[in-house]
Image (tube, rainbow, N blue to C red; front, side, top):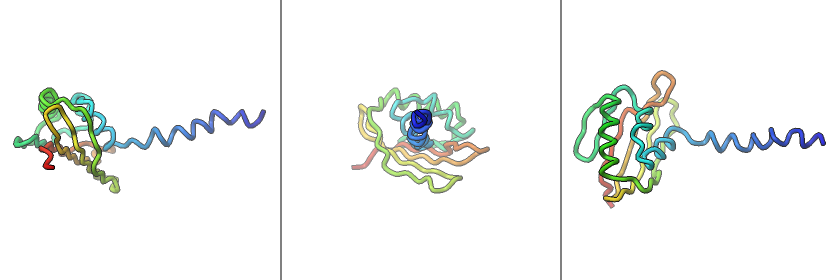
Length: 131
């Protein structure tokens, strides 16, 4: 009888680590896979360096969201493969994905920096994947 009392707590301890494993790199990868520019913009810093194919500029958070929304409309995402992740620093993270869309494959890289206690994207690059 006493052992069953702690069963819910034990089950909770097994579930918690699996939930907290998804860091910002993985969350961003999932949002890119969904083509969700609006939710992705929540990770943007106030200004962000964006390169999409041959267009490169520094944009405000709102401008970057609009540009990314346009890219996703023209290139509907189907799969994402996390190729590379650097999250050994508490201040900087870096991720590289292969994004497969209806029109082809793209290499997506992004840099996150800790700003006011939160990881924010300061750079996003989307390039044609060279196979």
